[in-house]
Image (cartoon, helix red, strand yellow):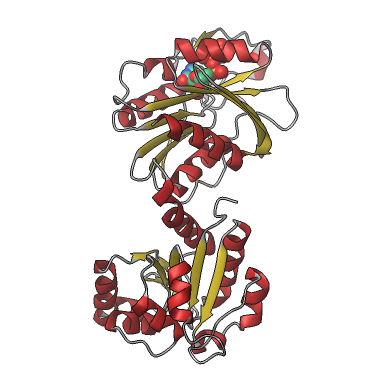
Length: 397
Ligand code: CTP
């Protein structure tokens, strides 16, 4: 419930993307926000107020002339943390830029004090038109934030020009970020997250790796983006969908992880090493695939570089460094040793043999340890664990 106590006015103007905005209304409500929907008369041709009332559990406003709505455009704005317009049609954008206030939504946009985020959606030619571009530039100059539009199929068919409204999860991520950045010390800061396993090649087809899925790293990166950070995720071989809004650098081996970390480290205000590097790699790489007929395969392995340890003297002054420790026994003591040895501000301990924790699950159960504190976090979805880790890191920034 990362948006509890937040109030959003969701203005919906009349485009086919209205059906996708039902998902936006639903997700924001699930995240704890109170969502007040305003429909323009054109939007009502696509989706009725009952749909949004059922999704948001709140009354939906459609007109300046509704009973008890005489001051709705003022009251809703004053209570709102953010006004979102999705879809924002070419017509709505033109009316807003021109200061026209001929319905409830445009009256609110003229009287508003809250920040605004819009998700344009229209035919690609309408979007490219000088009039629309000039109107959008006007709104951006006034400080309005814009998400999308994207390139993709439009109502009338395929297109390779922008016009299609950003997908609901992209709009929701932008809304969450706009709401939460105000309260976060990570807003505007550079965050470097590593995630996933690495793999070391024995020959052109065989690798040594581990069971890490990359989910903890992905969720940490997503949570940092939601707080307004500029996030880079260095991600090992993993088939997770990369998080929205995050720069992703793909790597394979521990050596590649090390050079990617070195490249981004100097600018990072927060480093979170959630990656599970392959700790061992073969002493020798064979350029040819070894045939099975050769019988037993004895591989000599050597430890890979400790990437986190190597960052010790190269971190940005004042930055915060968080490591992970995955242990099977003596977890607490071993995690504390790593905290000291790698000169970390925090270490997140998880136990590999605990049900629902560690690799290949959507949940995790961790203890967040600093030199002086220890916080036991119960079994939670990894995204919520990520929020707890960032809360602890923010306190140290
Ligand atoms: N780590 C690293 N480079 C490695 C191995 C680990 O940077 N080659 C980082 C991990 O990303 C994690 C922390 O170090 O943040 C601790 O990882 P862990 O595997 O628990 O510890 P190791 O130092 O590898 O020690 P061991 O495997 O012996 O327990």
